[in-house]
Amino acid sequence: MIASASRASDLAIGGAGARATGVQADACLRLLDRGVAIICLDRLLADNGPGGQRAFHALCDGLANAHDIAALVLKGSTAWRGGDDAGHERAAQRLTDLASILPALPYPIIASISGDTSMIGLRVACVCHFVIAEEEVAISAASEPHASTGTMTGRETERWKAARDLFADRSIAMTAAEAFAARLVDGVVSAGQGASSAVAIAKTLANGPGELIAIAQRQAEMRRTALAA
Image (tube, rainbow, N blue to C red; front, side, top):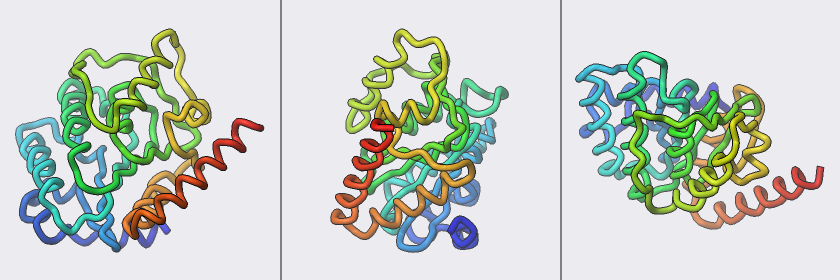
């Protein structure tokens, strides 16, 4: 499934999103079929210069004004820990800004975590309706001194509060399985399957609320099975 999704993603996003985001932002945002859009967070954080900052703001505007998006996937590897060491401060701030705008978007958002995650990355994931983590991912308790520590709002609140409580007295990283049991992530998949799994969920959610209920029921059964093991 991921191979076909990649071919579809070669098409630049159309409509209002394309007009708003421009060429640089288009490299980060692609439209798949069924109205599913996917953002590559690694690319979004890669350019630490003024051009990258302009593209980031254009992308944020495009997300709010793109009427052709029915569901959004955020995927990344290094991005979830705040990007690479170079430009970490600016990358952390972009992630904080992204976490602030996502709750206002009028469509479901699915996070695909394919790399180790710091608390700033977890803050972004906490905004999303669904979070999928690959099995080798570790979530670090390390704080991010460059990121804003302001109060987050909307649907992130419960999951983010739970994360802060869990890490308050924890000095070691949490595994993906532990994060699943603690309800910080909604599913754990094999390495390399995060993006394709998130896209599959996004396509299902784009079909309507009935499919959302079915996913929630399957998640509940998965969690009961994991806790009983």
